[in-house]
Every structure is written in C-alpha cells, then in structure tokens.
Length: 596
Image (cartoon, rainbow, N blue to C red; front, top):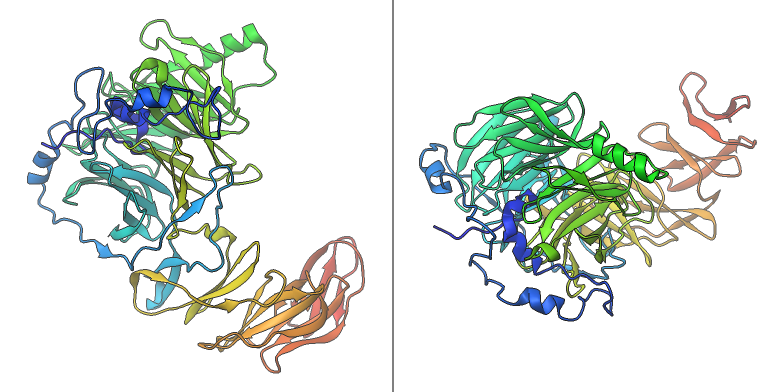
C-alpha cells in the first residue's frame, strides 16, 4: 500500500493531512527578525529540514496514520465504470519567473494564449481560454489537478507543465484526499464525482446543491460540501449516502473535523464560523458568543462580518476562521472550555485558509489569502511570515485558492492564473497555460477569435481559428498593434475587424481582414477615448470626446465624420435610431441630439 501523502490539497483540511502536511511545515519560514525578504530566523529552517522525509516516504505524525478508509483499491474493484480517458495537451510552455513581492497576474503580450475549442449551440466551436479556478495535489505530490472552464487538467508539479485533460466538462471545483489516492470534481448542476488516482477509475457520484467548496475528511472516506443554498452536505464515498444539514445561511467554506467523523466546521454569511453534526442534524458550536464576549471586553472599533474561510489544526487543536472583517480568528480548547484569542488583523478580507504547516505545535502556521490576492504565512501564535503578492492594487471579489505541497511549496490559483511559490527561497513561477482572461480585449466571430494582449511595453494581436473541438490549442501572434494602447474592436459581417488604438491623442484604426495579416494603420481626425455603437454589419458609429460623430466602415477603410453632437456632461447613450436613420446622442440632463 502506498504510504499516505498528507495532501494538501486544498483540501487543506486535511490538516489532517496531518502533520503530514506537516511536512509542509518544512516550509514555514517565519521571518520575524530575519534578514532578507523570505528567509527564516537563524536555525529555524534548518531545524525544520532535519529528518524531512523524501518523496514517497511517510512524514512524521503525532498520532495514528491517517490512511484512506477502506482503501482506494477496494473502492476501485467494486466500481464497474471504465476509467476516465485523458486527452493530451499540446505541449507545455516554460513557466515565467516572478518577483514574489510583485508577481504579474497577466501574461506578456508575446506569450500565446492557451485554450480549448469547444462546441457551442448550433454545432459551432468557439475558443475558450484556460482558467485556473481551483488546484489540488494528487498522488505523492509530483502531480496536481487544476479545475477550470475548459475542464480538469493534470500538471507536473516541478515544471508546472500541463500533461493532459482528465475531464472535458467545465469543472467548478476540485479537491483531493489527504493521501492523494482519490479526488472529487464539482460539475455544473451540482454533480459531484469521486475518482481514484492514478487509475482515474470512478468511485462514486452524487447530485447535491451546487457547492462553493468541498473537502475530504482526514481518512478520505467522506467528502464535505458547502453551498450557498444554505446547506452542508456529507457524502459517504463508499456507499454514496448523503447527509444534508440546512444551516439557514449561505455556507462559504467547509472543513471536516478529524477527531469526530460526521462533524463539519463551516464559515457562513451569518457573521460566524460554526460546527454542525451533519449526521444528527444539529449545530454543536458557534463563534458568535465567544466573539461578542471578546468584543465586550476589548471594545474594538469593528464588528464581525461574513466569514469566508474556516480550518482546524489537529496539532494545536485550534479552530480558525476569517472573513470580511479582515481578521484571522483562533479558538482554543474546542472540546473543553472554548476560548478565543485576540484576532490578527490582515489588512484585507480573508478569503482563503490553507492549514497547516510546521512539525511541532510551536511551529504551526496557516497560509492566509486576502482579497487583493495576497498570500501570507501566519504562525498560530500570531507571528507573520513570508508574503506572496499582492496581485492586485485594490481589493475586490477575486477568487483565490491555496494548496500546500509536501515539498514545502505553495500552489496558488488566483483570478484564473496559476502560481507555484516557495516561501523559503522566494522563488515564484507563473504557469503560462492560464490567463486572467477578464483583462483581455477580445472579438469572437464564427470563424475565429481575436485577442489583443497588452503589457507595459505595448500590445499584440492574437488570433485562433475555429475548427474541430480540441482540448488544447494556442493562439497565433499576428504582430504588435501599432499605437498607444488598445481600444475597441469593430467587427464586420465578412469577418474583417477594425482594431482601435491611438496616436497623439487621435483615434487610429488598424484593419485585420479575415484570415489575413494586420494592415497599415490609418490615422483619423477623431479624438481618442470616445464612445461607439454598431449600426449594421458594415458600419459602426463613433462619438469622440469633443462631440463629433464618425462612421467607421469596412469599405472604404477609415472613419468619416458625419456630424456633431455638441454638449457637455456624461453621455448616457449613443446608438443608431432605425426610424430616423440617424445617430442618436443622449447626455444626462440634456435634450437628445440626432446626427446628421
């Protein structure tokens, strides 16, 4: 039987991972008092490294080994379904090296965009860029899985190279058991499937409330799921039996407790983290009373708000919670006389907890992500350790997932991008297979998709032709967009596009014929930064900041002035009025103007 791999799967719950992940402990380099950006205090890292198990060996634990209940092999033998059939990837691109203090969320303009050609309604295909929504190490940690809109992808951990697509459907979430022998995927519509690894043979499937989070129990025998439909669900992997508890509040995170099967900690929109005995259908712990007691004694300026993340450390027996109050909460003596410690301020809404690293109670640390996509190691005694990011200059509702590797490194899926970070050395790599597509300018037609990708030095035009469905394909880079930044893309019915940029404050157009190359730029008298609207498949309208109205046409190429709509104030609408066959301009608090 393969030795347990204290997973880390984002299933960090596996804190259970028990120490296993402990092994990850090797990774927690607390910086307090240390010199350099990412090092450990003198002697701390070296002491953690002593006795570190090699690949495939069992890490030290503080109690009985947490193997897979029943064994993955038994589940496989009783399952008649055929194994999943992976589809090969195109071939990996080398990852980019990033500054861990200022990592780049977006690819450079010269990096091809990877994606899949997927069927749409009507038998057509469209190009869908790969996205990293969630990540989970499997097996002995040498591979990991990435869930996203184009499916479930398997990667080699050391190089980050994409190996194959395991599931072709859109995958909302992925989790893996602490020993890496099985994983679960959440699909659209609330379908959850449990699959053995590395055989890829199905073990169980179920229909549940669409989960926002799922995690395996310490022994891998059950899977906990939390839903915004106010439910915590526990799936018995061996029997397929479901136990469901209605919490009367949105559930944002779940964490099966290792010492009491059937109990699940959850973070909720009811401004607390709590524990429910799912089998018995009753709540057994809530943080509200402890938090309010602490607030009454300490009179802080803040109030507790929605809790987004929860975890439990089996070594220190600490229950952890965090959410929209910017705090990391710690509850001690959970099974005796629960008490709460002063919260740790983290400068942003807590959106993710990966628990835990460190081989001893004194070394234990949790990795915490906040909503500017910053990840920080925080010792359970309150000390602050190494930090990755932030990836964004401002906070927002950005999704981020963290998974701890047995090597001591950290996988980060943030805003659809993927990173591997080593807190000890500061090395950070970004996988070039994934792009934060929300920041890409795109134009999609039946025949092809065009993306305009910009970085600090300019913009490049990418295109991918739509053909037969394929798991992995890359864009072709047509060349740099000659101009100052990128604006709108104006499509015409025959597949021609006019790409807008600027030069000297004026609108510049670069035409791209179907299947052709970028044409020479055309400079226009229109001011840059205007508003546009479509008239038909041959003509687009453009209202420049000065109030002049232009028509952008395929033939002749360029922009022709057709009139003016002078005025000041915000333009509330600009469109083609079919009845009058004129352009209509509306400004807030002013009469509508028709042009010409």
